[in-house]
Image 1 (cartoon, rainbow, N blue to C red):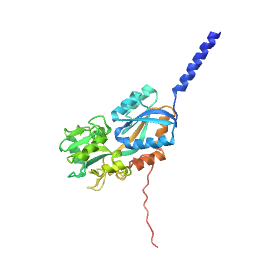
Image 2 (image 1 turned 30 degrees about the vertical axis):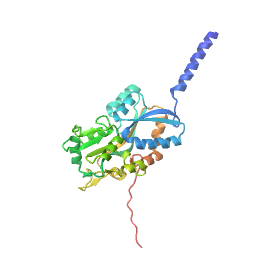
Image 3 (image 1 turned 90 degrees about the horizontal axis):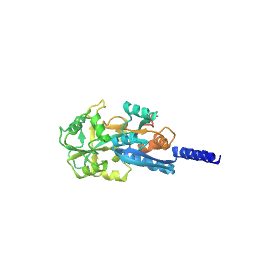
Image 4 (image 1 turned 135 degrees about the horizontal axis):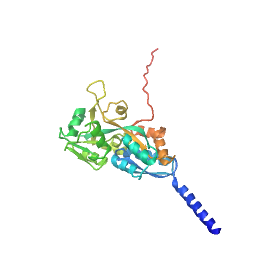
Length: 300
């Protein structure tokens, strides 16, 4: 009888311990790992900083890497949330549904841009869309520098949206990171660089302001404007109104079927405070509506 009681207590103890360890986080506390596209690092660092100050018991450990590596982490269960420049395609959604019995959540959080940057002493800082295409395809031999030749969101976006699936020319070279792209362009007048706007567009960030003393944001031809000959620099305004042609979304993909810390961080970025952080970082928030109102002053 005593032996039987001990066996029952053992299994109850194991079950209790297992249940306790099964879910160790909620929307406001716990520890999780997320993988983030490296081109979004500055703005996500700001999101994490404010989130941490608001929820001291929440610990979100971010790893910054290429877009392909982020999706690989999601598939390998080394992370439950990724922040990248696209959502899941149909094949990926079905893969997760068949393996997890549910589809991960994903949606746009904000709109970013791939900024074309040149040295302050460069001879040209205005490019037609066709000229950008010629540079990337190798017809124009100016050296183009980006944050990797494959697997990054910048590379994928430019191949898909500018080259329509074509290959880069031999004049396109890879840097190890967005920071290295900026460093190369600050030291050379004969190259152009492609980086996420999050790295170069924050007018309140002293470091980014120091970059703008050495480099310029190039103007690129607007492809959606009714008026011809409109050229725009990447900015919150030109992204919002579709004037800068190299704009792209910033997505979260969340593999979580309980109200955990990943859900809490997603909600934080989607609601007012998180959206204001995107806005303050000069990205275009996707969840917060902006209304353009026409008004006039009546003279008496």
